[in-house]
Structure formats: structure tokens, C-alpha cells
Length: 296
Image (cartoon, rainbow, N blue to C red; front, side, top):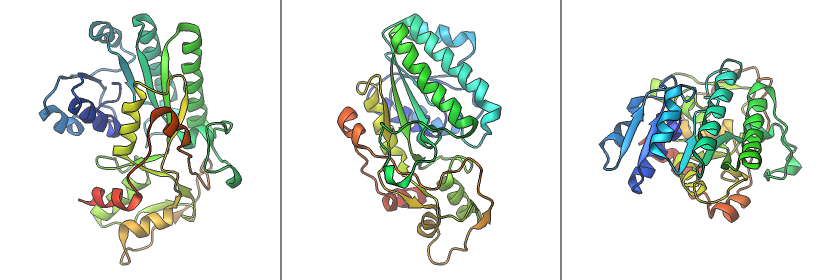
């Protein structure tokens, strides 16, 4: 699992170990942390941690030695980092994974993509967004995300490398970094007693997905949904302003406004219909329950 020491990757590692799978984590620890894997390291099961970059020559050797059934890549375009700074390394890492899968054969590549980056700004009449919606990426992050999806399709057609691509909404939960998403930023502000910053007027809506639900979709994608881009979201939109009200309560100070980002979208909600059909998956954690778990 590339990026297994990150927010999503560490939770997925715990789930796979609990189900009896052997897991190799490959992470250069530039954005992830061994602390995220502390529970996984205590758990029963076979866990090996390789502190290296997927573009290193040793990565291909690890794949050849371990002969995995599935390679998860969860280290694409790390949040909190300008896409202009991580685009080249992201694409190189994706190519390294695809080439290792091609050489090994009979291995599935599963990736988590940002749905907001992939679809861009979608008209309200076309939401919740289904997979038939055309990709309209905005900015470098969006273009790189679309390129990854297209590379997966090319390697499947040309080299028979099977893949599953999950276009995920805004994933949140324990271990999320303050720069990893708005929920993580708000949680950090509440812990530190500081006023958070909101881009724009806070009326923009997002589809918030609890980490356990996201991990469940990733686990299912190992065996199902091959060759498809599948939306994984709650199907419910919540404004950033309402999110803060739920997290801070009536005594919470209003967030500090800042200019809206050029590549921001105003409204974004995903349809989970294809995920229900292809993965047998549906979200079970509503936002209120997820936020309660986050505050424990």
C-alpha cells in the first residue's frame, strides 16, 4: 500500500489487518507518519513497513518479492500541498505502480481520487453527480487527477492491468491533518482555541464522508468494480458554514472569512448509486455521528 502511513492509508491498514490480510506499507513519510500506524503495529497480523518512495528502484523489488494481489495507491496529490509542487512526483509515483503491476501481472491497482478535483464545478441541476457527468477539472490538481484516471484506463486496455478508481468526496475522521480538509482544520481550531479561516462566504457545500465508510469502499474495490471510476460519497451536501455550527456549537465564534480560491467550486454532492451496484457499498455514518466520533 503506497501512502499507507497517511490519514486514509493508516485506517485502511488497520481494517485489512483485522480481516487477516498481510499488508506492506510503502511510505516515504513526507506527509504520513509512523504515529498513524501505532495501533496497526500493535495489532495481530503481518505488517511490514518500507520507508521508501514508490519511484525508488527498491519499490519494484518489494512488489516482485511480496507478489501482492492488490496495490493500493493512497499517496496521490497529498492535501495541504500545492499541486504545482507535487504534480511531477505524483505522476511518477503512479507510473511506478502501474509499471510494477504490469511486470508482476495478475495484480489489481486501486486508487483514491479527489472527486472535486476530477469533476470540477458542476451545475446544480446535474447534482448529485453521477459518473456519466463529464470531467471538468480546474487547475493543476484537477488536470493531474484526470491524467491518473486516464493512465489507469490505458494500462488496462494495453497491458491488462486491472484497476479500481474511487472518486471520493471530502473524507474526514481521526488522524486527519489540519491541512487535510476543512473538518480537520475546524477540529484543530477547536482544540487550539483559535478562530478558523474559511475561504469565501462559507455557503459552498461539500459531501462529507466518514473515514470508516471510505475504508469500507476501498476494501470492497479490491474484489469488485474493476475498470470503473466509481463515486464514493454520502449523497448529502452540507455547507461549510453549517459544518462549523455543528462542530463549534452555539458558543462558537464565527470563522474568519478569506477570499474565495480561484479553483473552488460552489456546490458539490456525489451520487453513490454506482457504488451500491458495483461495490455493494453504501454510507452508513451520517455527519452528526461522524463528528461525535471525531470529538471523542
